[in-house]
Amino acid sequence: MKRYDEEAEGKTRHPLLWVIVTLLIIFVLMLFGVFYLKSKIKMPSFPSRNNSLSLQENISKQLEGQTGESIVSIRISENELSSILNANSEEFTLKKPSVKITPEKIILSGKTSNSPLSFKVDVGIIPKVADGKVLFEIKEIKTGGVSAPKVVTDEVNKNLSSYLSQFNINDDVKVTEVKLYPDYLIATGERKT
Figure 1 (cartoon, rainbow, N blue to C red):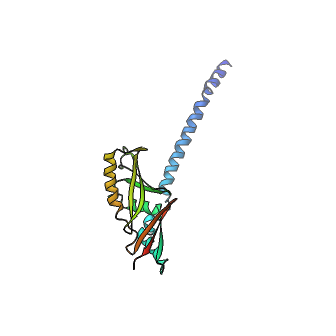
Figure 2: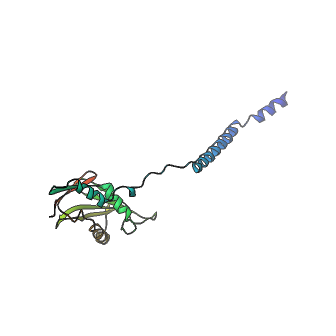
Figure 3: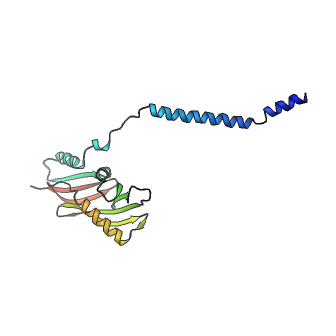
């Protein structure tokens, strides 16, 4: 009888080990199932931003809606500005650029490169009106929350100023005012006759 108890004790000594092995097998099977199903299921595709109206098309559409009026207003969202910068990101100074518009300024954010060692750059921009066109004045450049050194500021300022100067509202409109609101800006102007 003693021998039977010893054998029974030996078989049930490690029930925790069997539970752990069983859970590990279940986990591996579930993981395999997830990856197998993921490879077999086709995910729905969503339309890209390129299918939306370009900025120039949007401006033209807004101007058509104000036909006959001598003073016109054009609304431009931060998403439109971001999509322009991302569409031209190969030639743009900052990588993965995004735009945030606040009532005080436009904040252009991006990375110095696409490498893991890049750092974030925030550029504070104020839109101004000069000679009937919108100009973007760079007020501050911060890297990692700290103001960038003058050498970096001058270089980024030069590159961004030349890049941003190519965006104008429309050749048929003489811009008189630009106002910033949360998430968008409104440029007001007079039609040229």
